[in-house]
Image 1: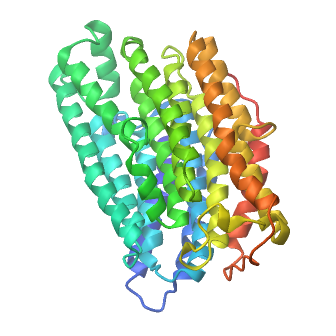
Image 2 (image 1 turned 45 degrees about the horizontal axis):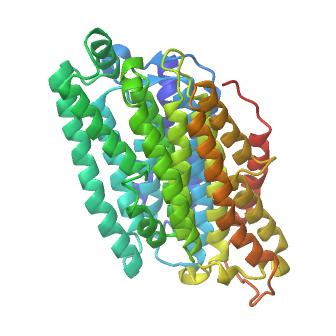
Image 3 (image 1 turned 135 degrees about the vertical axis):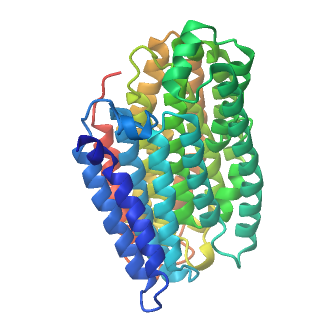
Length: 469
């Protein structure tokens, strides 16, 4: 019964996705009704996930699934973040599609299917299961990115993402084949035992881990596999971009951390590699963000930078007592800030997202002071300014790096955070230090506005929640 409760959020989301696919066959069911239904399923799954949040590490239905699925406090927190991202995305979508009329019932079903893949990915402790989960998630995101078939930028985005994503999936499968050839298993626990008894430098294991890291780094938009993210985020609808930037990143870094923590020797052997990847990801993302004029493109580049901070946390993990607390906290803080901005863009962007650049938001504080204040909170959180969740998240990441003996990486992380303030302040300056050129009429429902201000509260609430490193 305990195993069923731990798996129940996944079953709720899967049932919701199937129900909405069936309802799509009936013309009388309206799109807005689908958004309410999906909100209900996300809320129910979140509540159940919250009930089992303090459950110790458990192998789910060990005899049936043969140890392929494992639930822990880390995976539970990741599941809560993913479900929260799905819930706020549907709230934002309700408003967004009041103005942008290209939505159908299947849109919400695909969000639920994508969430289902993400939840399964966080629980995966076996490579084939992880690949299936990764593809369920990825195929759903591909469809969501290209959902507006009349938009040229959306079509370009899906083409780039699909082609490059297929290569990432191929790398993952190749890595799985190599690791199976070297260890005779695809289970994380047995791979860890093999590495402990033999060597992490076994050629097949070494090659396999490298290919799997390539797939993870691509999905996380980390250097040098980050080029796709700018155009893809820009081409997708604002709620979809927010969902990609948060829920997908949470799922990928959860499985990345779980895989890296299977054995101390495996983690130790890749620390230098991850060190340089983290540094290039942070500073490369900052350089890209500084030159952007579109808010979505700037946020895409900012997401690259935040992947760099998460890689610092991966470098600093302790495989002996891995809890994932710092990574989970950072993912939660990043999610509320990013989702908040995209919720605001969902109702402020207007028809066809006509307000997209920094200049388009000049004088927003004069006309809509509360929306401008909310966006400012999110930007300050992402920049790491106290007393927001973003500041505490970066503080914990830097502290964990110092504790693990990576002082250079910690200092570079601080420098990157200081550099990022420049492009976050640029939007704040445009909102507060210029006269309004328009009234910023939205014409949508109040759901995205409600999501924005709920997330403002979450930014401060998470910032006040202490954790033990």
